[in-house]
Amino acid sequence: MRATAVACANIAFAKYWGKADPWLNIPAVPSISLTLRGLETVTTVELNPALECDEITIDGELLSPPESKRAVELLDAVRACAQSRCFAKVLSRNNFPKASGLASSASGFAALSVAARAAYGLPFDPVESSRLARRGSASAARSLFGGYVELPQGLPGDDSLAARPLYPPEHWELRLVVAIVCEQPKKMGSRPAMEQTRASSPYYAAWLEHAPKLAQRIREAIAKRDIEALGHASEASFQAMHAAAWAAEPSIFYLEPASVEALHTIRSMREKEGIPVFATMDAGPQVKAICLPEHAEAIAQRLSNTKGVLRVLITQPGPAASLIESPS
Ligand code: PMV
Image (cartoon, rainbow, N blue to C red; front, side, top):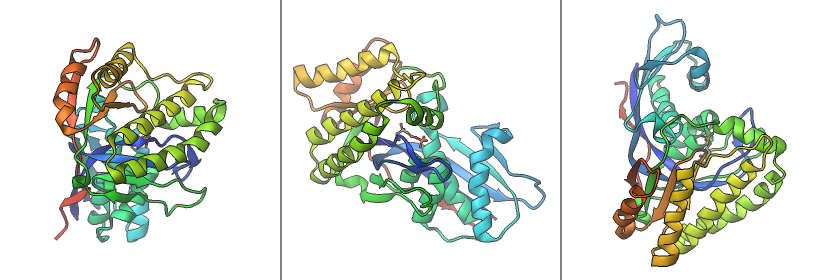
């Protein structure tokens, strides 16, 4: 029994930061993202009765037991559902570098949840796969769907929480220009950073109160294809998230000097040249510019000439996760 699935990365306009339930990995705030074409993880899951545990290889590297813990938990959940005891060999490949600052965990858990269900003989069900992927990494729940996607906030104990598609990729031809400023692994993973923010930031309560209002503005802006409204609310979302994390003790600060330079480039193109371009950032130093297709090349050019920027990628709305090989 063998199945292969593909899923794309996503970037959030309305950021998820903070958990309502750390055990079930349930977000405390709603998040809204765009799935990105071409930034893909392809994952094959093959059952093997001779194995004594799951074997997980990502980009040619066999994971150690602590590294594979979350993927094994996902496989355990699928096995429980399929009433199987058979372990599996998992081979996963990203077509974008792990250190590129684009989260491979989102596309990775999304592809794994689709391939694992199929390999264990369960029917293709994006909502169920989204729920499963959410337990591994909440942002992964959004990579099950193409285009514009929402993961609602959840309540403690509500393990049914899954993402839902808002609009398909063709609803709005936006571009996200990614400025890569650092290729080292990130300073602190999102999981411990969220916990540190919750436990010690005086702004965490304010973030929890404010984030749903920003998500509402972002939902409306996407519905109306209003770049100004989307851009301002998206900037407010990442800045409030980073501010809450920065105010934690010890402080969590993801920006590198080149991130600040890139943020200035974006602001200057908007304020001095009248180009509708807006920034967003995640739990790392890379800066992503939100813009319309006709401005993407010029923005990419300016960002690649910005001090400290190593490389630039232009990305666009992408498809849902899918099965590319299923057991016959
Ligand atoms: O799903 P995680 O645990 O990788 O957290 C993702 C957090 C952010 O990327 C900062 C925001 C988001 O909504 O993607």
